[in-house]
Image 1: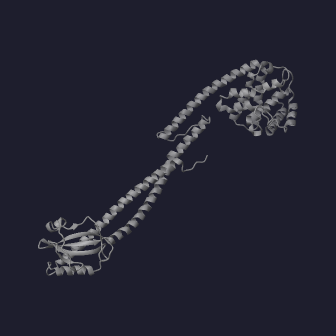
Image 2: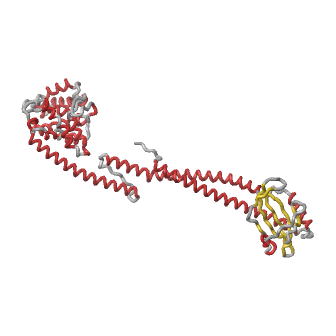
Image 3: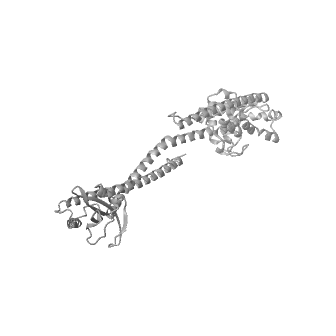
Length: 464
């Protein structure tokens, strides 16, 4: 049975891990984007703050740093300079004093006084700059579209105290575009990294799952299937006896060993019972005992002729020795009748294969015994009994015993008749070879075997 390298277990676990990685990557991406955006915004503010301190330092180059006209000139110069080098855009910029009066503005004209709230206290009292933590969304009255802005305020020092403050309202649209561009590039790189991480993780997980989980489980399943089919000798080779699957495999091996020992004991007891029945049958019908021994010998010789292995030869011999054991249930007057059987007696005699198979049925691991017993009277053309099996439907060992049984029936002596010679029996078999009773190929092998023995003056054929 072929197995996919991606087993259902591997697919389910891999899917869960992929989902976990995707969720984790999404959370990380969202969080890092937020951190990145915040960092860029802070960097923009710091750049703006440095820029404003540069403006404030220019005030000290004026003849009168308090002169609003001088302040306005500096602001005008800044607004007319190339501001594209900055990472931010200036929405508006102005100087105001402690009372909130506008001293200079990037948009000249009349401007209402600024309301100086507690937000500006650090500027005038502690001489510290202030960067607003809030981002405002306003509609530009001239351009008519939304502006995103934030404020930075630095103090203007004069004679050791703060004379005025410079406030810069930063237009963050340019910064937002830069953030979006960076976000897009960042997301692409993050997604690429995530995909590579997922693929690498999947390969590592698949390899680990397949090597240390799926393959051991499949081996366990294969061994348990073999054991369930009666192969109690099957064992799982264990490489590492410390992990859980190896411990499970060791338990299965122990279970199989216990079952094999139990079945061996049961089968030995059953075989002993069969041997006792065989002795009882010998007492009841002395012919059957000698007949079974001869059939076993001829069967084994034919099995060797066609190249059966040692196990099959052993099964063949034991099955042939007990193939007529069911005759113990046949009435004595039928079994020992000195003449040919009538129709009803013959029908009764035909029950012995089934009886033998029933007796042997508990030998689960040696089903060949029951097959030989049940079907050694089946014919190649389907005219035999009890199940009218045909051709290769009949098990090989049963076909072998069928030929050996027929041979001994022809050549063996009975109370009411003497057996025919080996040559006469060979002649009948050759004549009937293609008439359907026996497997033609096996019969050809059997005839060749017997003829070789005749030519070699085999002792068991000399009297015939």
